[in-house]
Image (cartoon, rainbow over all chains, first blue to last red):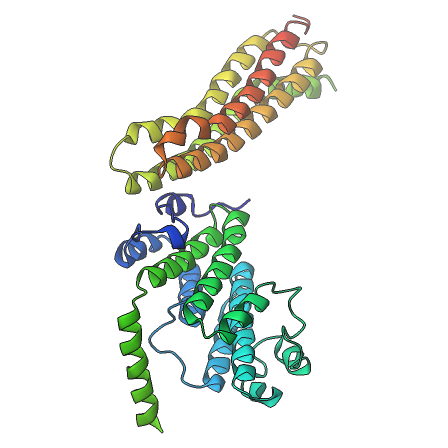
Amino acid sequence: MAEPYITLVSSLPYLPPFEQAGRSPITRLRLEQRLHNLDTDDARQLAKAEALVSWRMSLAKPKTDADMVLRSRAAMQDISQPALRDFIEFRIDQQVILAGLRRRNAGADASALEPIAGASRWVRHIAAHWGDPNFKLAAVYPWIGEARGYLDGNNAAALDSLMMRVIWQKLGPIAESNKFGFEAVFAFVFKWDILQAWLARDAAQAKSRFHDLIKEIKNDS
Amino acid sequence: MEPLILALGWVGLYAPLALGAVGSMIGCSRAGSAACGALLEVESGYGRYIGVAAMPSSQTIYGIVVTMALRRELSVENSPGIFGLGLLAGLALLFSASAQGSACAASINVSKNKLEIFGISLAPAALVEGFAVFAFVFALVLAAGIPK
């Protein structure tokens, strides 16, 4: 078992389950200081992955589906760590499924997925099973039914919590697969990101951000 | 043929010490790396972590004792026995020290966040030590049966 990051992993604090956390156990600045111990190539791959699939994604969030697809393809060509690639694919699959559910809820047909064709292995499958409540993916992604329920009930907060929980649960076994390796480090970073997003949840701020986004879209068009 | 058998005898004689020391180096390095990382996270109790990091050094001591127990005038009659016993005891010490280092690193990693589990988290490392002691004790017992 390769254990290249024993010191780094041991210098990271325990992350409590995000729903029970009262405060973040480490600041971004401190985390970045610790991440300086990463190998240059691993650090580069992690930065790319963070910009692509972290919960709070980078500020340079792509504005169109086509941009997102292009960006994810470009990033995936630069990412060689198998566990990190698997995680990115998992996150993109998750986003594609949610996009499918949202578009179907809005009354669109399967052609609404055309802009994201090629983003995930499931796009064609989803389009082919557009009429099935769970796109015939419930066996692979058991959370789809619950997510659909929250979307139908316009419960965005519960949907967010569910998605965070799904990602958190995905990251657990990844970290365990190599407790002192890159897998443990990137799992920590993505978990920390979720924890930060959870702690930063603020209804008033969200409302203001929503209005800003609406203005931005109006100004663009 | 005789020089080869005698050479194997020398290998067996020194193997417990050499392989035990290699294992201790690997184990102490792993546990020590974890201890260094933990020092960044904790405010006190530094000695505790460094102490745990030293646990895999015991295999070198066992190796010294086994080598001393095997030490005798090498002959064609006793060299094969010394080779077999010494090499296998050395390998057991090497793997146990290396595995103990990983167990100690895991213990340091979890106990830095939850001090109350410090003792129990060392149980896997203690179990590994137990197996090293078995290998050590039985090497001594069997060494007594090798012709002088």
